[in-house]
Length: 119
Image (cartoon, rainbow, N blue to C red; front, side, top):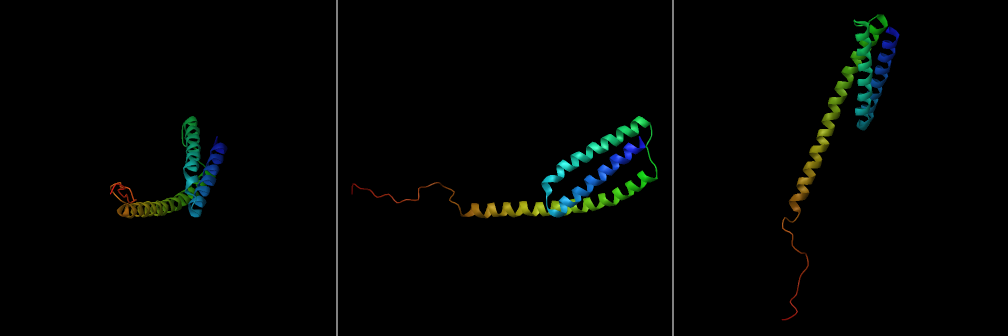
């Protein structure tokens, strides 16, 4: 069981590295899928611990968890920066839309000129 947990933690670490690289490259669309895959790893690890009746841990797992903690902090920082960037993009788009709407006609009227042919 410990070997399986080590394998799951290694997979979790690899997915975390992939999330970090996606955030650094500006490829935010991939992040939700990767997070879901990490959730599967977490649930598998929790099941293994539940089956054992205790938290399975050894030196290798402890080192993996230390590495994961540092990587998670970096991911959180990067996620916050990404959220700020996306928030700024949304505000910019809303501002542009507002400015464009200020110059549009509010009342629909025809733009042509009509001449009365009877006069």
